[in-house]
Structures are given as C-alpha cells and as structure tokens.
Image 1 (cartoon, chains in turn green, brown):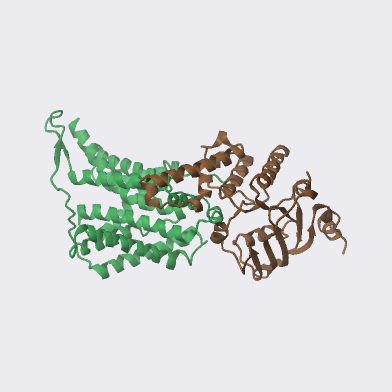
Image 2 (cartoon, chains in turn blue, purple):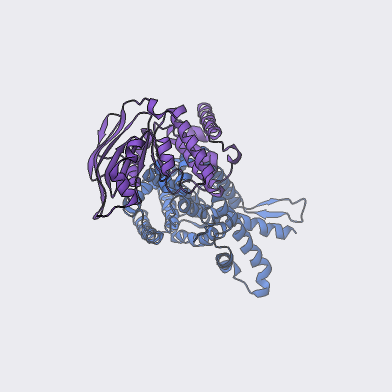
Length: 298
Length: 263
C-alpha cells in the first residue's frame, strides 16, 4: 500500500509538471484559436534567459527582467506575426508559430549560448519521508516536485482569478468566444492578443524555471512541449482546468502502468503511454474531457 | 402611438455621401442621411441593398471609400470600432454574436467592460474601491436583466438558450454599455409573432425610458411602419427614399423596388 501511494504521488507530481506546459497551450488556443507550436520554444527561451541573467544578478531581478523579455516577445509576435495574418486559416497560423518556434530556438541559443546550464533557485533536492508512522519505511516524496506542485497550484489559482474577476479576463473570454461581438463592445483585439501571449510567456517562464531546475537548462527543454501535447488533447484544447486534470491523469497513468504493467508486457511504457492515451481520446472523444464540443448544424 | 407628436433633438449622426465598395462591387454609393437625437430611425430595403454595410460603416467595421461621418459634432472620415464603442455607439448583429460559453450575467458584464475603471491588480486583490465598483456594475446589469425579463436564465450559458432569448440577451449586452446610439441589425429576424411583439415593446421602452437613439434594420414592414419615426430606403446601394413611414409607403420608387417593375 505504501509503495502504491508512493508511485501515485510521484505520478501526480510529474503530472503537475506536464500541466504547467499544457496550460500555456490551452491559454493561447482558447483566446485566439491558434495552436501555438512555439510554446516549448518559449519555455526554453525563458529558462535560458533566466539562468544566464541569474549569473549576474539576484534571482528576483533576473525573474523580473525575463518576464519583461517575454512581454516584449508577445508584442513582437502580435505585431510581426499575428497582425499580418489576421483572419487567415488556423493551419496558416499554426505554420507561423512553427516558424516562431524555430526562430526562438535559434535566437535563444545565439543570444544566451547553447551549453547546459544549472538553474539553482534554491529548491531542496533530498527527498522527504512522510507517514512513516503509518507505513513501514514511510513514503518518499521528492521535495522539489512538491514545491513545483505548490507553484503550479498558485499559478492556476491566479489565472482563474484573473480570468473570472478582472475586466481583462472577461475581455479575454469574450474575444475567445466571438471576435466580432467583442470588438463591438469596445474590446481592442490587438491589445488582447498581446495580453494573452504575455500571459502565455509568463506561464512559459514558470514552467521553464521549474523544469530547468529539475533537468538543467538545455535544448531538450523545448521538447517537454511534446509531452504536453497529449495532455491538452486529453483535457480539451480550450480548457485550463482540463490541462491540469489531463496532466495529472497522464502523470499518474504512466507511472502506475510502468510499475504494475511493466513487468507483464515489458518496460518502457512511460515513453508511449501518453501518446496512446491521446490517440484513444482522439478516436472516441476528440474534444477531450473538458473542451468545447462543436456541433455543425446542416 | 402618437408618432406625430414626438419631438426630436438635434442631429446626432450625420452621414454624408458615403460610398463603399468591395473589390469592384459597389455596396453603397453616395448615401446621405441623418439621425436625430431620441428618434427611431429604420433602414429598409431588399436583400443586398447595403443595409448591414451601412451599420458597419457607422460602428467602424467597414471604412467608407468616400464621404464623411459627423457624430456629435465631430467630423471624421471613418470610425474605428473601439472608438465608436467608447463614444457610446452599441450594436447587435444580424446573426447573433454572443459570448456563447459565458453566462447571461457575464455577457452583460462584458458589455460594461469599457466602463470599468479599477485596475486589474485591484480587481485581482478585491481591493475595496474595485469591489464597490464591481458591485455597482452588477447592480446595473441586474436592472437590465429585470427590464428584459430574463431573470430566469441569468446564470445559464447563452449558447444553450433558445434563439429568441439569445436575441434578447444580445440587446441586453448592448444596453449594458449605456449607449446613446444603438444600432439593431434585424432584431426580430426569425422570431414568431409573440416574440416580435415583445421585442417591439422592449425597443420602444429603451427609446422611451433611456432616451436612446435607435437605428434599426428590419424586414417586417408592419413592425417598421409601427415603431419607426423616419425611414431610409436603400436599393442596390443607393438611397431611394427617406421620410416618415407614411411618406415612404407612398413613394413610387420604393414600391417599385419592393414589388418589382417592368423596365
């Protein structure tokens, strides 16, 4: 029982990390209908900026400057990519974000270097043992993951408040639902896009910080986005809560199946579990768990 | 109704020689008309006459090729949607354009977005003044909900409401902006007789109680003749008639446009 819980908790924590990246996808898709292929590159870019700036200044200052860089990036993307392509098909915008993704990968490494950097934001590395009076030997928890989970929870709570309680949040939801109507009540589309991409940049920064501190800041960070893709498919492209639940399901699912199914059907399940699950969802419930269901009337 | 006795104020919106074309197709050519304070002004005409284009020019979705717009004494070549909304022009759409995933209350609150003064940080932190402001906006929204008699669906997602109610919610969102000029694009399209009667009543009440100036496009001639003070008739992008409902009804060019004529 203790072992099962340990695996379960480990899975939940891994899921939180996937969700951190997936939220970025869901935010932009919801507000602009664009599938942002560059989310992974943004995570890498933010983490690189943060780690290199921290060599010269304290963490908080570096964090603030990186955030500003991400906001500038949002302005640049709106002005140079989205505005010229307004009213184009989704596939064209997807291709454009693919371009942005390659640009950011290259530009980030050109600007900040392409080595592997250690990002130390003071997260404790040694595992903690809990419940040792209930189970023999207790349950080992990775404290780093625990802190990551707390950070993710705070982020989600802030985003939820932002979307539900502020006028900008209301405007964002309005734009996501109907561009034309949003304009008619005086919501400027261009400003809204800048805000959405800034928020996505902020989420990328948080994800880059947490993942970077866990794995080291290196090119492969851009690839965590590939793990977040099945998460958004599972949760539904338009849903931020979906991204979290999807992340948790995939995190737990792959850990449990690795441990309990692995010995039976051979190991390595962790590597493909998420994609197979996503495939099944695409077949039977393409809108995901919480996504909007589109019904075309003839 | 005592149309004849109604007094109107000054001209609030003056459209002069507006021309608009899409590629080679002329949507509007040299159309001029004005709208007076507090009146109900209808735009009618057969399909494709350029009625919706006209509304789109007024609230800045389309920018006219030629002509000028004078709104509240300010002369300009074109409006911009954001500016139009900020200056008190609200509108509804021919095909309902609501925020379908949001509740009725949130749709109406979104309509008040321009009026929200608190910063988003203050709102995020429930800072005292921001909270008071939010309550004030919610009170206004509830007034409109009462006025349009949609209390029973306040919290429903609008995408799930029947068509007639959605039309009413869309009117509500426009009213939430407290506009001085309200543009209605076929507010009664697709409604049954009862729904039309209700909508007529709401429109007249808006005009009466809030003093809102109205410009509306409608196909139901009975309704147009009943509720409007003055009517503009468009056909193939040109103005072919302008005047009181009685004038327009007897205008030969208008009769020809509607009934067809041998050339």
